[in-house]
Image 1 (cartoon, rainbow, N blue to C red):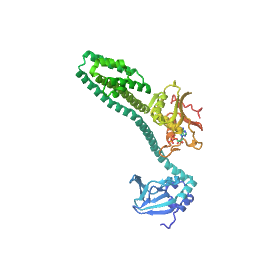
Image 2 (cartoon, rainbow, N blue to C red):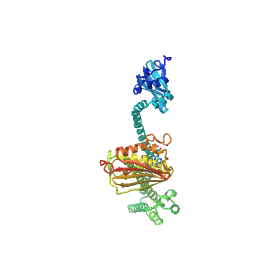
Image 3 (cartoon, helix red, strand yellow):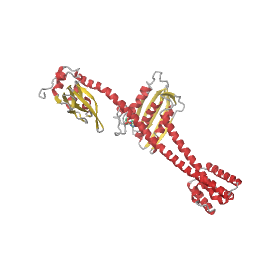
Image 4 (cartoon, protein in one colour):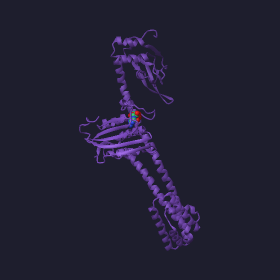
Length: 476
Ligand code: ADP
């Protein structure tokens, strides 16, 4: 068998060659080589450069794909069929491993010859592309899911980071609060033991309330004033022979309590003065801790609110919304990306714009991708401007950065899926493709850009009334 040359008649059963006449097909046959394999023999090892186009003319091959260490069976290839066209054309490795299930006979058209012939015979090229299209579409859909997951991952990481601080602050405050409550409880016993009269106890309670009110009204003292006030308080407490005076001086001084207040308290509490002071100091701490708790939990709620708003979780698919809502929640969700940079964010909003009917959470993906790209382009410093304007029947949103601009050779490919200039693992190249689909296909709007060495602006036009005919001719 090996000695007989491959003929056009041998290759004829393959649909790939249906549009070629015998003379054209002979050009393919002349460069082809026979290959045979017995059941169990590896025909294509996988994860290796494609040797060319394998024309399977008799028998069945079993396909395996590698899943980590494991080879997973993926199906059969039955003759007549062809294998390896795309990896050969794109000069990428063929990932699948193919093993003969029965005795097989193949004609191999070596890589260089195949590339030459596929270009020389457009009907063959067309057939390959036709087969590739649904595969690419499926691949693109999978990648788009990756992109969505990657965006979600970025958001989740940022959110976890942002939630961490208020969550630890709240946890600390809760623990300290428990301690303060214990101190307050213990001092009540000491009051009872010291035999303080009811009337005096009531006046001590008034002094405590006065301290709390006064503390709530005070702004933070400047650091220097605070130290002076604390030193004075410490001297007074020492003079009263209050144990652990250093512990109490700070909260009492911060509340702005003076010599007069202290004298009044001492007059009422007598030997229980240290206990009374501890109780007031603990109450002051408790008040501050409650404020800390409120602030931390409010911060957490606002972050969760941002995520809910970002996903328009409360409102379903199509929403009637103020365009600024989505822009603002997106900025909030991306805040961690600019936090440690000198990037300045400018909002130039036309606040009077009416609500618009949109796919809210999808549009947020557009803002995310455009703002994310702008932040990436800016690096550590520069200005990101978000502008909104009424523009005839449309709302125009500009996302502008003062970054280095987009190189002329990059510009024609910008909206192509998988096109990226970012390092592997950083960019998927789907951000702008996804943004374009959502704006153009879902909303009937348009997405364009202007760029120079001074920066880049992406323009998004969205129509107020999506059912009305598009009036976008004036726009580039
Ligand atoms: P990705 O961000 O994953 O690379 P995109 O489709 O969002 O994919 O962007 C494609 C490419 O367009 C980017 O890799 C980058 O080179 C370029 N690009 C997009 N936006 C900007 C911008 N504002 N400034 C400079 N280059 C940009």
